[in-house]
Image (cartoon, rainbow, N blue to C red):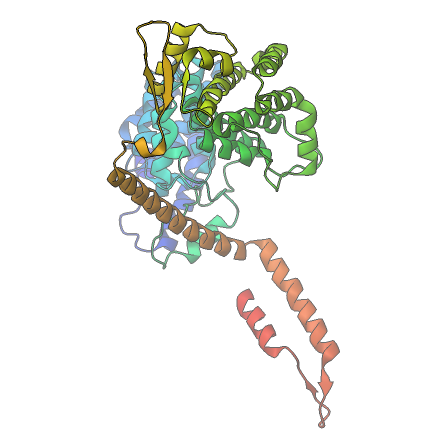
Length: 500
């Protein structure tokens, strides 16, 4: 066993100074260790003893490979049913969580497929045990540890958002979902790493793998992440961010068919627009005509509800909500629809301030609440609205009659917010936007450089070169000495420089 440990501990080498040497050693260690573990790990006891002897922070790659072999062995023994060893709180779970908390990102990037298995195990084990909260922080922290910018999309993003929804732990996901996704792993990442070693470090997204093809990320994974992220923002009542995430889903390319995930996102997008803006909105311009046609056909009750909302007639909106009650419940959107009904009432009460400086509570009930509340209930509703929504009003009793009260709307000049607080808030927003723009510029430059390293771009350059050569030979003008004067020489030389 000692010789096995010596081999596992041989990486990372202590004397490696260059990236090329590190990469070569990592690749050799990865291939040899995979083969070696297949032949020697014939029992759980051996795997446990190896994991006990290895430090996950120092020998992360070896630890990951042993842990991966151990998990696969137990899965096969369990016949697709999670055995006792896989449940949260047991030894194997503790080993996996320890790796997620302390791993060396440079080593783990060498084994993308094994890394995904460990992430999937932690996520799935917590979900099967009905304890999703246990896996949230380890997976979230592993995402940040792998890429502090959280700007490169990985399957861990999807696991995190799903677990947060199941556990109803919405705020824990914010350090990840608040970051903009700039990159999805591609075959050009390794070449980009090699070409960028001599350049200063930036805040651009870091590739999540080194040797292997990217961790398999499907079209559905991408859609689900932004749908789940939008649902988290909905739970936090951050309607603008929720609408942004859902807009990404509904505007994704669709050629021959539209994903049901996109249809589900459209239904929620319609409701979120009502909650954020109090009106409907046009779909993003890049939405495909096929997708838009499908949305109109499959989400007709939601469009009808939105039409009733902007009509300003409570009875019509109430009837639409009642007619579609079964649909809202089947789609798990009943909670959003109820919030839309509450939002309509809030909007109606606020709308009275555009016409009246003051109005009796009886008139508020009649004009905005369709006489659905008596005077006392209306007063309680107004007080709750002022406390929860920052509604700038005052409720007064001009007479001794307890049943007579009046709602007075405060004008903009009566605002008590100090101007200095507003200036500080605006300064912070401007600073935040400035940092986001800097990050955006860096990632755009990185994406451009990655594009230049792809096979498709090189093929494009070659075709352009051939076209230039053909045009040059066709337009060449003979000289007095019988030689031809080449045209576009400068362009051709520039193209060759890019190819080299």
